[in-house]
Image (cartoon, rainbow, N blue to C red; front, side):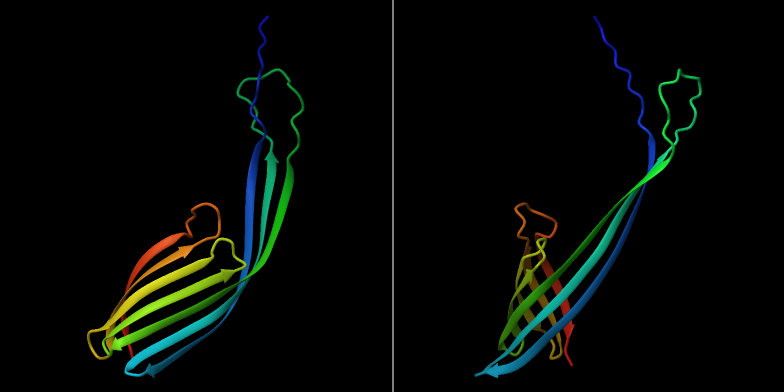
Length: 172
């Protein structure tokens, strides 16, 4: 005995996605430059607080399919158009703490180290950076730095980044 199952296409639907996001950020940072013996140094640090509130709403509207080109035997009643809305609200707060220091063994050359940590954001956890600054003119320098940002997620994500930056800096 052979059985055949006839499957038709499901109802046609239109999806409407609305994303409303609000982000408030407050930052406090400081920089200190001083001398330690014959060395010049700088220390910097900061705290950043971010509050994120977002609403994502997905509305699925069932649309009546167009009539077939050839008449088909009635297979049931076509449901009237309907809409299903699925709202989702997210709200979280995160803080970023950063410390950095730079030591100039000569007036033209500096060595930089930095560290930052995020609390309350699982996608970001820590950032480390090291670099060197060279003043090839009295007020103009070039800085090269290597940094690594890691997440606390158990998988590698796009926020797990190693970067090398090159900057041209002028000082007043």
